Each structure stands twice: as C-alpha cells, then as structure tokens.
Length: 100
Image 1 (cartoon, helix red, strand yellow):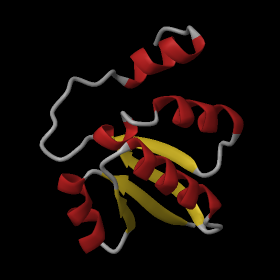
Image 2 (cartoon, helix red, strand yellow):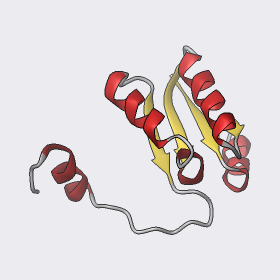
Image 3 (cartoon, one colour):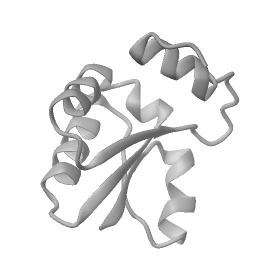
Image 4 (cartoon, one colour):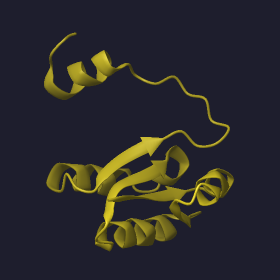
C-alpha cells in the first residue's frame, strides 16, 4: 500500500521531494478529480489531503469515510497553517460520545 497526497501549491513540493505521489490542486474541480484518481488507484492505502485542499471537498470526504474505510483519508495541516486541533480525547468524545 502506498500514500497519495492531495495538496495545495505551497504544501505539495515537500511530498513530491519525499517521493509521495502528489496531485497539486487549487480549485474544487481539481480536488474532486484528484480524489477520484486516488480512490481508483489500487495500491493507494492512505490519502493525505491538506486542510486547504480538503476545504473544497468536505462533504465528499465525509461520504467516503462513512462508506469506504479504505483508502484511509487523513487531513493534514497545510504548509504555514497553524490552527488549534482537537485532542484524541475530544475527537473520541465527539465521534462516539465517550469521554476519556
């Protein structure tokens, strides 16, 4: 299984240099196409998508996660973006209603 990265322009270079198959996106249409390619590629096990790119296709990502657990979709911070993120306990409580 391999990684596939869907990233905005600023974030894509690092993944390309690391040898990760990467699609650079800047519009909703680009992102939908890249997501479709990633899902159709047989050996892709994990799709990394930057926050900027994911903002174009939030609903599609949620549908994919609900219906198809593989490939796994992980949203990662975009280059230069620093946002407060929820802790694992907060995410668990939000997903299943259990406090940690």
